[in-house]
Image 1: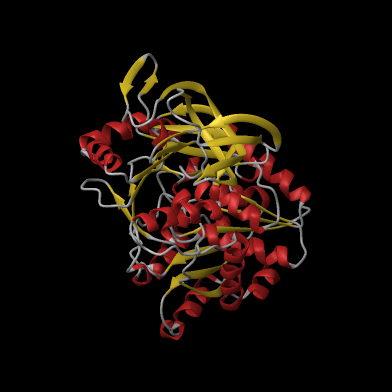
Image 2: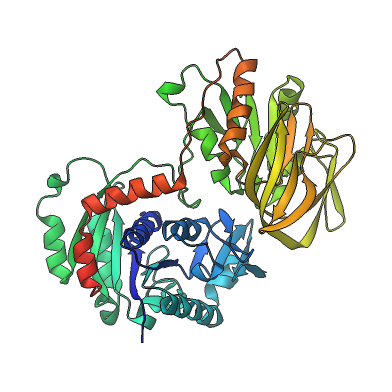
Length: 486
């Protein structure tokens, strides 16, 4: 017997916008004073976050939890897949369970993982008034369907009503909707209560009678057309468009080069930079930026080798000699050091910091608070760490930050390293500490004879509410609630 009302959002393909539609539904019900939780049985992403239990979970469900006014829990995303070169790390309830090949994972029946997912969803249903469940990819990938534990197996287990989402921006959305319905089993079709056309640019009246006629064809409802919304919410890494942020308002502004590693991870670290200055994502030289950022990566050694093959190691060293600020986060920090060691093999790093890194099997996953001193000012910062490597700083480098709290417990140790204009840290989310980021960017502006500016700040709740307001204006939420039997 279900305690909560449950709704599931599935897509006609990957990248249709399921995560943000699910987030908007979470926020919509939360604003009604209900206890709400998100859930996604399995997510594949390198953009992970730290849960309240100190485990890894996807940032999509992390964001949805924030929309629900809840502390993110691994129960909301019990299975996280992190692809790494030719292998995939399988993280279950926040901890690494195994590392397997994609083929091995795909061909496994995954019944044990499905059981875990259903247990966690059942728990959330008992604890809440509403649970918003997100599917993954498409529910009708025929080569995967019998082993798919993200879509209809979840919906059928609890008889959850399903909303389909199609991305009209890319074209072919009606065909995708028809194809999805035709490939579903008869009992699965009965669970689909309607659909949403997402990311529409233009006048919805141009769609004519066809959204309603399609709904009539399958005896479900058309809930509306969601317009394309420009926002500052984090995106899933599998479908992100790596666009440089050379906006017109940044005409007289500094340029930041971000190294676009093949296995780049936690790239939303860079979002506050993108929204405030010109940013180029680069995979080859020359580097022209006033500041260079080496972001996180799921595979430090492979991406370091890639960087050398593309001549970016020489470009970074040249930029450092020319006084450009070089900033490394997590894997990027490890590359800036003297040496990286894994399984007895030592590789010479960029040698811009007196730091040596060796990898250990155990992964460090923690929420962090700390103090950073920059330009004779102290800044309190918050962030998180997710890494295997342990970096030992020598006395020739000064610490970047003093950690004062780990997973809400008092702690005291130093993080990262600084030498002149080169900085390294394990603090993911660092640039979301706006006071520090404003000071950092202004120091680069002043050096380039550009006047200091106040940073464009935003609160995540404001962005969530902005998107949700668009959703409530354009989508028939009353009809959705009626179909959920509120």
